[in-house]
Each structure stands twice: as C-alpha cells, then as structure tokens.
Length: 246
Image (cartoon, rainbow, N blue to C red):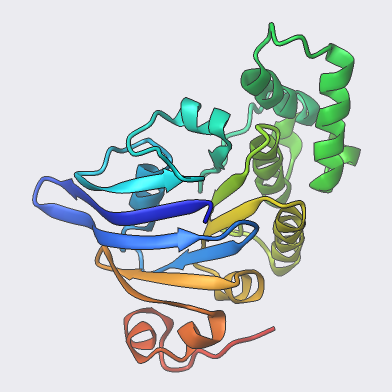
C-alpha cells in the first residue's frame, strides 16, 4: 500500500469534520472519494497532506508515519496535491509555471541546468496536452486548460501519489474527457492517484475503488459498480435515479 489512513479524526470546536476514517490506496491505483458537500472530503485531504493535524489517527505513506508532517516535506517524499480552485501564476507563461515547480522541488542550487529544467517542463506539458500553449500567459488559458496546468505543476514535483481535489469541477464534457485522459496517463506512468470529485461520470469511469463519506464518516467503500448499487450511498448521495454511465 502506498497510503494508509487509520482512524483519522479532525474536529473544529464541537464539529467533527472527519470521524474515525480509515482506508488505504494501492500502488498505481486510482482511488475516488465522494460524498455530499460538507461530508469532510477536503478536510480529509488537508489532514493527509499536512495542512491540518488530526486530533487522532495515523497517516502512513510508503510505510512511513507522516502524520502531521508539513506539506513541503511531504512533497519532497512524493506526496503532492492540487486544489479545487486553481491558482496558477497568471502573469507568467505556462512553461514558467511548471518551471517554478521544478526549481521548488529540486532547489535552485541542486545542479539542474536551465536546459534540463526546460526540457523536463516541456515533457510534462506534452504529457498534459499543453505543450502548444507553453509560451502564452497562464491568464489566457480557459478553465479546462488551467485545470490541466494545475496537474502539470503537481507532476513537476515528481510525485509517487497525486491527490486531486475536484479536477473536473466547472468543466464542459469535452474538457472533462481531456482531464480524465491525463489522469489515466498519470496512473499508467506508475503514479497512484486519489480524487475528490462530484462529477459521477468522472469518478465512475476512472476510479478502480471509491470511498463514500457522509457527515464525516465512511459509509461505503468498493468498486464503482458496488458503490452505485449501495442503498445507503444512493440514499445519502447518489439518488434513486443514478446508474453507471460510460
């Protein structure tokens, strides 16, 4: 297992945002997390990636206890995340946005040459389908391409586990397909992926296993087919009319 979460609890005053949640992610797997708004999904992400310290429970990454470890240290270990609201450096080119991540990860005195850094950035942009946009300012990108740039910037940190917070949020069906294709490529490259997503078309088509949260607690875990037929999940989140769509 690349990621193991054991009995994590996170409280904000009297509110229990994450309530005794446990799950694990396999090497090279795409694992989805779904649930209603306020179910605790992003809070759980924030605990795993070091932005919040849990009140109890443990998080292990590649067998190492990383509970409460700072985000920058986690990124150096290979655990990287994106954000629901993307915030590229708007006044910088698409290429320079990725170069920032490369230099931040390697360090400016690491010995990586400018030529090598640019070649690596271009390779990542090609992977994300953005190489043809490398010289334009990030502010000129439409929303769908900004989402893919966010993934590209995360990939520049050389993650072993990539955690995506609503990568398809606000996208058109065509843009969703483009993001799903990038996510599949990430998995095929050997990087495990954890996704929070409200769009069931995305979740059901790219994830091998899915966990469902409701009021901070895990109410189900299984394959897309199992989740789509789980009565508690249907009642809490999916609705009676839901069915798996390709």
